[in-house]
Image (cartoon, rainbow, N blue to C red; front, side):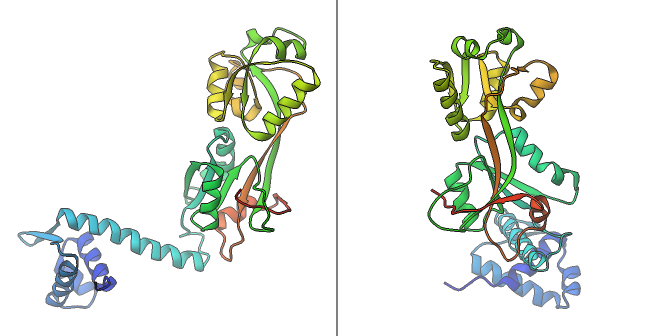
Length: 298
């Protein structure tokens, strides 16, 4: 099968957006008949009519609209390529961000806030499991992955983990649940909402073992958004960084118990070495601490 002729596709795209063969022929310095021949050759190659005529106007067929959608993406990607290689901030492609699905939405918003202030900056945000996101990062279909745990493994230097923040973890709940002034009593008697996130869960297990308490865990949750909702609904006390329940704490719906649990959760931006990193990401990570050591997708 013959390859697609991209000159034909470009001529089709220009005519499709203009809707007039004559004006486009003049712009591309071709005769109207030559331009019409180019488009007919594309139609022959694809096996479908791309336009239907209504008087002197050209209207896209259903297949023509599909082809135009692809053509726009193809040539837009080419423009992005040139912009990237020229390091043009004005025409840079969107910053492609992957976020661990269990990551706090408030933390994600904090990471995005500098981008939101720049009206010319654009980004895409994709949630998922760490392994799949890191595979996409390695294949360069993502620019950065946000996670609470830097990847570990045997391949030295495969990933770079930049520590963005480290926050203490507290007990949070509706005020009526926090009347007890004693941490061991709270942990022993109140229903608890505990994230499965590794550093929090490890710290929590160590805490209750040290206090010789058998906790009443009412919910083991792998999604910080659900931890927040369950705490709002007064299901129990949530073990989480304050950023997860920032809005509820500010409004007074939820309070934080004044106990130092000695549990911390860190937030990382994971990248790979690139000759042409996205300029928005370079600016965002400037001055952040890079974690040294072997990192892998496992």
